[in-house]
Image (cartoon, rainbow, N blue to C red; front, top):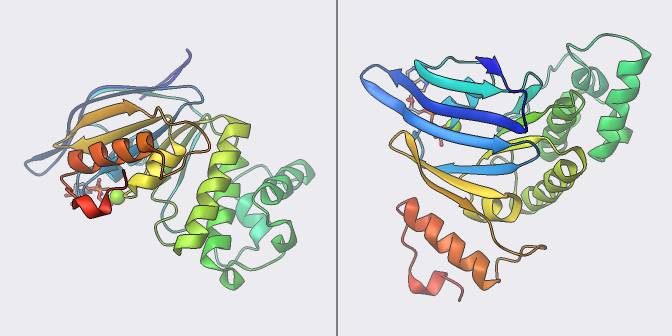
Amino acid sequence: MTTTTTETAVRISGLRRTFGDRNVLDGLELDIARGEFVALLGASGSGKTTLLRILGALDAADDGEVLVPRARTIVFQEPRLVPSKKVLANVAVALPRGAATRTRARAALAEVGLERHVDAWPGTLSGGEAQRVALARALVREPELLLLDEPFAALDALTRLRMQDLVGELCRVHRPAVLLVTHDVDEAVRLADRVCVLRDGRLVTDETVAVDHPRDPGDPAFAALRRRLLADLGVHPTAQEIPE
Ligand SMILES: Nc1ncnc2c1ncn2[C@@H]1O[C@H](COP(=O)(O)OP(=O)(O)OP(=O)(O)O)[C@@H](O)[C@H]1O
Ligand SMILES: [Mg+2]
């Protein structure tokens, strides 16, 4: 894997990943500009996590070219905090020890609204709070590429909406390139500059989200894009479910 140096944060070309006799990723092409927010949709088992793992250097491609920035972090569906470390130490984990790191970790926790929880144990946090710690742990590393693998999927609907707003806000401030994997079409359209659909190992959709901010699911442009994306995912909602 090589590091990108230009205005392009991610460049993927001809990416193949094979498990057994199945090409889970089969000639996938994707470029992400610096600061761009891309959402990736796809059926279960279509290879979304496989792609993220390759971008995060947790797995290797069988073929193709993958260029990513050196500074990149992944946030998973579950927070994966170290239970024996307090919240502040979890955020600072694997960073150089010292006052400067602690200050940065505190600032990251303040950004996700958890400044009062620096001395808490992970086991005492709610699901949403724990996921915000995971977000702070990612942010404190100042990633040029933020990889999010269904980071809100385990949260209740209200917390999920709040987390979406928080992530949108943090990304506008810090401007990492983002690849967000989600099953939630509305989440993708609310947050992303571009939405892609992965099917049969390739992107069958790669569309710029042309919906005005603040994005409202009742906006006809929002509804039309949702309908196209659901069709690409093989979901054909009844007319009753589609707001006009
Ligand atoms: N290490 C592995 N060994 C064998 N098969 C694997 C491995 N990792 C992933 N796969 C297979 O590759 C396919 C894609 O898996 P992946 O986890 O990328 O899907 P996904 O799109 O993230 O699905 P979900 O939406 O359910 O999370 C699946 O069929 C999975 O079983
Ligand atoms: Mg997955």
